[in-house]
Image 1 (cartoon, rainbow, N blue to C red):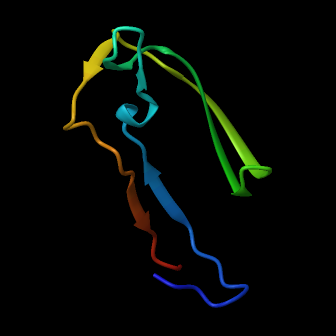
Image 2 (image 1 turned 120 degrees about the vertical axis):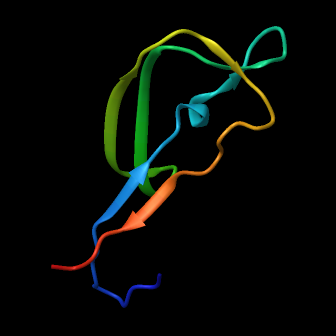
Length: 78
């Protein structure tokens, strides 16, 4: 969806924990509990908002089937 300059919409993002996975020392992709920081910005040096959250649960290994894309919903105006 494209927006005109100055137009705003509310967007809902559902982020899968797989997006926080990293490659551990054994070479496997891991998701583990801990602090995570989500940043929104115009660029990596122009951060406009930061959300800190805590992942909970057991450490797990993820494979090539891991979820790599957020679920994005543009909410209706109203």
